[in-house]
Length: 366
Ligand SMILES: [Zn+2]
Image 1: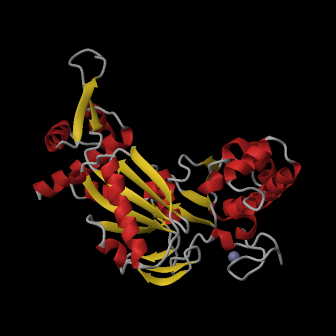
Image 2 (image 1 turned 60 degrees about the horizontal axis):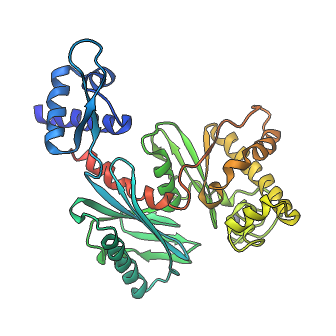
Image 3 (image 1 turned 180 degrees about the horizontal axis):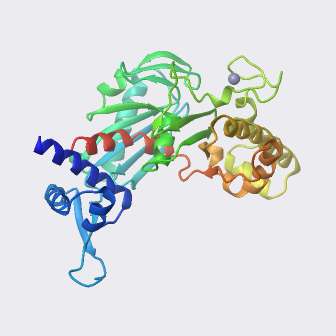
């Protein structure tokens, strides 16, 4: 019983140190409501284990200087692999949330053994090139665009990869580490909300529009794991055709591919926009009009922060005044759009988020 209680407190203390970045035994005791002997014993064990290190001393306020406690960098790591229709991204993350290395490469998805093998071979090359310490790697997390049945390791449906009921075991079998799978938008949300407790809608504006709903510290998946299909909310009655077969879906107006009709890459699109190209300006204005409708609908439904992520989300920061102006017109309850948040990560968000499962499991195993 005593041991069980210690483990519970140790987990709590380790998670607290991770969240704070730097802290002291005194702060741990007062913030977590633990006695000083309990904190001393557990911190001692965490330091012996190597997870926690003393990184210096706080300025004295009289008496002995308190030690600065932090999580040891690169004590444990995990790999994230994001699979999209035309690219694969690899990241190596550490437990503190730092990206140690990343690599993105062109690779056209195919449901065949040559593709599975290339994913595994490229992982080996990635790890070798960065001289990664394999003993520290907790596992490899895959992020995939579609609905995933994690229990049976099946990709139930993916419009982007054009797959139904695809068995994911051929991936796991070729990877010499524990493997986990997660939907790409959920992964991106995990990356962005790591150690944040607030409710959040993550709107992913990539080659398709999707998202994730984060409420009370958990992803809300819905009864059929089909929640947050924001791309198929209708924003224009009888509007443009969507790949799902309906008309007027947000995806037909707000996916990155809409902008890619005007330029070879998003980088080119936004460069031309900066240069004042009138055709591009009109296309962007139209894009923002529909995005404003979509985000206002989400705000009306959830009344919480909305993070703008995905490929386009990465570029939106400098266009927030225009977007806010349009969104405010549709919202009779609010005069501002402070609920809109820009994403921290761009293309690598899903790969980063795919590693979180291993860090959470590790901390929960203490
Ligand atoms: Zn649709």
